[in-house]
Length: 406
Image 1 (cartoon, rainbow, N blue to C red):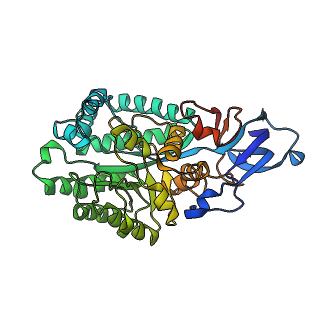
Image 2: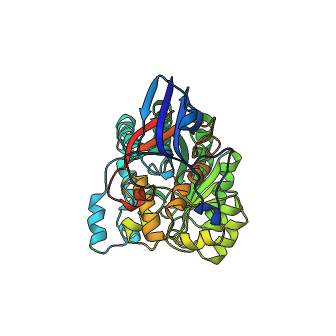
Image 3: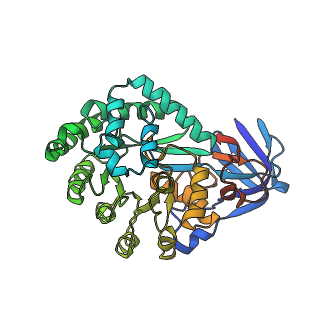
């Protein structure tokens, strides 16, 4: 099948060659061609160019007059396989309880774990499917999904099998990450070594046997997994071919960034606590700093120092952290708005962070995140808007008119 999108006001993120990531001052540059067409054939980008060069016909023709076309957002950090919401904890936060205080009372990740272990695989799949469709409506075409609410042998495998089924049935590009080390379950509260042994010697071999994960993650932060514990788990994951993508420095300077870099992590995520030492470590690596501003927004945390990181020469990726406790939304457009309003990123920087750099943070930059001949044709068409800056500016509206996946 062929699709011709014509009269495009602006075709955004056009690249003649593959780019792994965009760093530092280069993030201010966002390639765009005006008054163009885009031709899609057999799910791939076939060609694009000025309207004077446009093909005459295709199986479907879309008139995009007054509209922009962008590569779909890539969301490289989400937790969308979960059972039930946690709006009760939302009220606790309003009443002044911190994330850690809620966790100590049996809320947070442990709350989600209890519910997940009581919920069947089909129900988990159905709920996650609805969240995927919601994310797609906001322009997302690729999603990384983590386990981590099972916190048990059966629960973690159940989550990863749900993610595998989503991979098989959704038209979005999906990557699966094993996050058994999300928290210590109550049964192992005083036996950290026992839980780590369960992860390393029982779960990882079974996950590898079934081919259930692409990456491995650890919540390396104060009150969760130490840097030394994180290293042990990541080393075990590497023996099964799982590259790290880790939670780091959300709650404190936890050595999570340095640990991730030492283990060649694809990304280190959160980074609300990032200073000169962490920036120096990242500059010497191929690890993508991935920021989750909606988590800081929802929990009332201070935001990661995106401006300082970019000015130092780092790349930045953005993600939603879609989960029931600290970021119950998969709206990447809102993430762009928060990046601009709260972290002082330019619109061009935010779009680079949500497309080409986010694709890198998922390991899919060779086929997604940019408009390039041969790439998978995951694109969206905006509504008629006056400029590209209008997208993060108009923070409360869904400005996506149509999504084309493949």
